Amino acid sequence: MPLYEHVYLARQDLSAQQVEELTTQYKGVIEQLGGKVGKTEYWGVKTLTYRMRKNRKAHFTLMNVDAPPAAMGEVDRQQRINEDVLRNLTIRVEEHETEPSAMMRKADRDRDRDDRRGGFGDRDRGGFGDRERSFGDRDRGDRDRGDRGDRRPRGDRPPREERNEPANTTDAGGEE
Image (cartoon, rainbow, N blue to C red; front, top):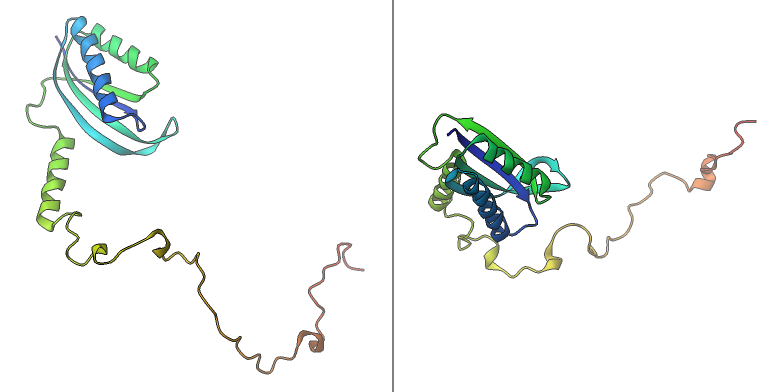
């Protein structure tokens, strides 16, 4: 039987448990039609490059499948019907990778790098953990900035009425 790598993207508002249930459902379809699923990898919620069906993020899942083409056709058909699945991709391969996929290796590499640096959980180095923060502490300029003081002096400039300049009036009828 041919070997496939199958990746599908599920909507971001599903829980991880619901995505696992979808994976179990598709495994059942494959096994019912004479195939088998070698391994599944849940890659987590990732940001999409562009919006798909009003979603900016999606749950990514990889399945290594050994099944007849009819089984993969049925899985593809069911995923097109299911509105929780945003997109899917099936690729025929010569052999499955025995080690973790590139996405899982990247996650492990990132986790190791964070462990070496102290990660985001290490707030004892003087981050924001040394004082209490509240919602109003944001420096966005949307709060009262207090008294701005006196205006600067006008200098030599006379008041507007004495400058022989017309006030900012526009005639809607045009020039006469």
